[in-house]
Image (tube, rainbow, N blue to C red; front, top):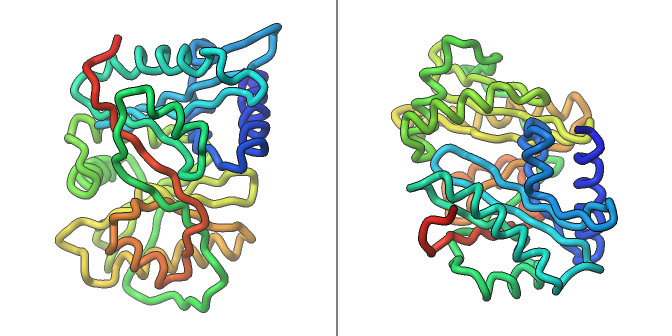
Length: 277
C-alpha cells in the first residue's frame, strides 16, 4: 500500500513541477483507500506509474482529479483514466460529479474542451499570515465524542447542503481520519458548531468543515473559534491553511479579517452529460 502511495506522490511532484501547478489530491482520503481501488484508477507502463485519477466521495457529490506524466501525454492515457473514474462516479446516481483542476492548468483546460463539463465554481486555498490575534471569552473548542454525531450531521445538512442520510454517511468516514482532530465549538457550554483540523507533512494544519448553526451565526462565535484554533496551531509551530468557495463572501470576510490570504485557486467543473457506468 505504501508503495503505490509513494508512486502517486512522486507523479504528483513531477506534474506540478513541469506545469507550475498545485494539484488537489485529497491525501487524507487517498490514504484510507484500499490498494486495489488505487490500482483501478492508475495507469502503468513498464512497471512505472505514469497516470492516476483520484475519485472522492463527499456525500452529495463526487470529485475527480487526475494527472498524467508530462512525457506520456497525448496518447489517450488521460481519456482512459477519465473513463475509469467516471465509471466509478457513475455508481453515485443523482449526485453531482465535479472535476477539479488548478486554475492555471493549461493541459486541464485543453482536456475539458472534449468532455461534457461546465465551469461551476472556484475555490480559494488560503494561508494564515502573521497577524495580531487575541483570544476572546465565551467560546471553547473540545474534541468531539460520539454524542456529538447528531450535531455534526445537522451542521453538514444545514450549512453545507447535504441530505441527512448523506451527511450521516460522510460523518462515518470523516471521524475515521487518522491525522485529524475533530472539534466541537461551544458557546457558554452549548455545542453550536464544529471543525476538523488535519495535520499534513508534520507542520501544515488544514481547517475543514468549519460551521456554526444558522441560529447562532452573526454573534461572533465563528470569529472567536477561528482565532482560538489559529493561535493553538501557531503555538505548535504549524502553518495554517483552509479552503473556501470564491463566492462565499461572508466566509471570505471572516477569514481575511483574521489574517488568511488566498495563495492559490482551484476550479471545479460540473458534469453535464448522462449517467456513466
